[in-house]
Length: 344
Ligand SMILES: NC(=O)c1ccc[n+]([C@@H]2O[C@H](COP(=O)([O-])OP(=O)(O)OC[C@H]3O[C@@H](n4cnc5c(N)ncnc54)[C@H](O)[C@@H]3O)[C@@H](O)[C@H]2O)c1
Image 1 (cartoon, helix red, strand yellow):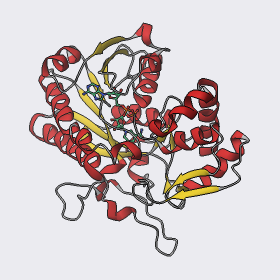
Image 2: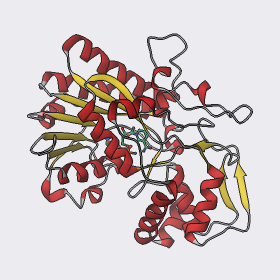
Image 3: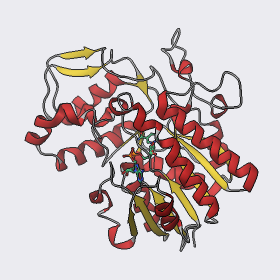
Image 4: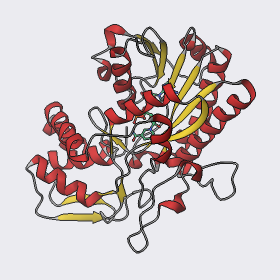
């Protein structure tokens, strides 16, 4: 008998890339899953494995009546709905990202009013102060610790754009509801997820798509030296489930790897795994790349969850490439690539 057996669970944004993997996992753990999603970026096809076993509510979670109905009877809420995309999207859609303030406020308030037992929030590494994520000095890399992003501590609130600020305010709202009403919750700071079902606005899928269409010269956004701790979606989902089981006091925990992988090294690995190697690389430094260097410190994650991500980048990348190449049409991707990189 697991924690999840028979549990009534609502997954907001459950038709999304990460949300749909979470739904699949919760169904296998025996939970009774309901999904609420407006399908603005989520897709029904993402839910093909679980659609028969779940209840689907399609609508806008900024609407109180819809949210109240969707939440009715739920014991646990995984809140993943958000207006969000990769760097190409969030840097060009600031007003859309700011609208997450309304969405998060509505979902959290309604969770409390509906008597939900606990909330697990998909926060983001974008809550961390951007100044901590500059290029490493003398090779000294930084691992982001949870206490470094805190709206109540001077110098600890300088999030990454409207998207990051909205996530930080979502975390703050959950802490406020815990302090005032005792609503149990955890904020999972997800770091640069990749894997099957992700779209091309995110770096790994964008780079795979460019190899798929055999782009040559092969374009890389930025100078290629920027790094991320790419984290496989299966690990993201396991970490969120573990966090929901273990943390009740509205704390934040990092869910991501402690590995800095340079974009240029990811490109080399993609060339190795796909068998396509471009004759020339072109670096476009006018394109959005976000912060220069980002990886997680896992001290709190290990302590509170007794868990850490286990999938190597090579293994996760191989699975992702296999999925992309077996589900995409060459002519379609070639014709639409410009749009796919910036519109979710
Ligand atoms: N992908 C990443 O690397 C990453 C990193 C950090 C955090 N996150 C967070 O994880 C969550 C899932 O992200 P994702 O990358 O899987 O895909 P995503 O951003 O496409 O997921 C968002 C989901 O929310 C739904 N949605 C948006 N607005 C809504 C509204 N008003 N009402 C109802 N549903 C709405 C969309 O249709 C979609 O299914 C998001 O909250 C995102 O901010 C993702």
